[in-house]
Length: 345
Image (cartoon, rainbow, N blue to C red; front, side, top):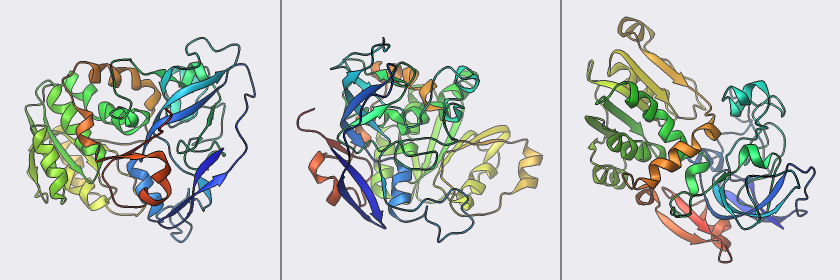
């Protein structure tokens, strides 16, 4: 089989690898049929994760298999697998988890103790698990990890359910449930922020402001009913919930300055560069801030269920639908949310 392999800044190529084999009766082999780039993949392709930046503790060097968002078709299952069968379409979560350790049972699936810390597809930080831009992928705990895709959902629209779409649900849905009609600020540079706009409006936010210098992104956000701005000027006590998805600490600092008393800020940006936060302002306002690696497996079913209602339209964020064979040439190009589709999927 082939793995799409990150080999150098802005460069990926197909490399041959052995076909994955079942190693236990709990495993499955899947074939991605609709895979997309996560916002962090852009950072990887730009070289932000390499050791030339010494302040990054978890730096990683190429080559390694890339990709951690996809809908896949089940090809083979072990005898103990009960939730999926060959031929099923499934969402493959980005992090590896067993489903039965203390952390997994507590919902902390991104911190599974059965595997090395930060075990994931698409980056060899917690071991080498391959990437979801591969012809075939081994899933070590199929019942715990794989989520069947409802038949009424489009695999292309939901290719990001492995991470960005389901993460976006988590960033706002629980907060809007406890704070109906909250005012939501979104400071973003990619797909996460746009998904958040869609979900926030669908779940009853009274106001959504989307801040992004990209005019095409702002146009999509307006289609979701959000007000938009190119840059952010701090609005004292202006928002109940803020979501930062830029990876820039200066933008995170601006977002928290806009929060109302006891406001909540969710940071989904991958902060590869250091910076400062306005800690005194945050203290005086009573801000809650979470900068977290997401336990996405827990949220995938709820995020898919919201998609099924028809009150959201994640397909609007899909910027390009491209053939699987175009991956080496097309992935390094700057695109919002390309989805690569297998012709035989």
